[in-house]
Image (tube, rainbow, N blue to C red; front, side, top):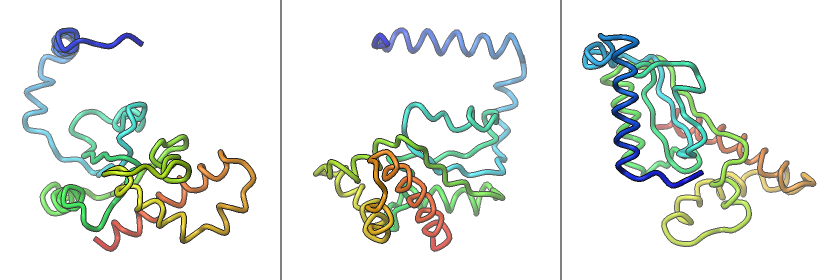
Length: 164
């Protein structure tokens, strides 16, 4: 895929805006007054996973927090602020923690153990791996190990939401 220039992105935005207005002249006016989502989505920052699109919701219907590997880290003020805002201000009724197979963050935690800020962040997943090492290591293929760690990571992050 060719790299998009800023000018191209701005033009795409103008076209999108115009098409929205043609299809629904009140779209933007309504959005100004519409933020009453029933759901908070905590998901991966992976560019292949557009949160509201994959669940069929429109803008304003899903409050979204994304980061590498959908982690709810106890010291992450950003995520905790999103949780508090969603619950206390927006009064969301449901919190969804969504992981996905093929997650690069999970794969990095399982295989490459990167350094720096990313490595520190992925320590959260390595803790999940450590807690389930026997189960994960008993799986034969790297894909099976990664898929199972993705599942266990979601369960661990749900527990962290409940503790927040």
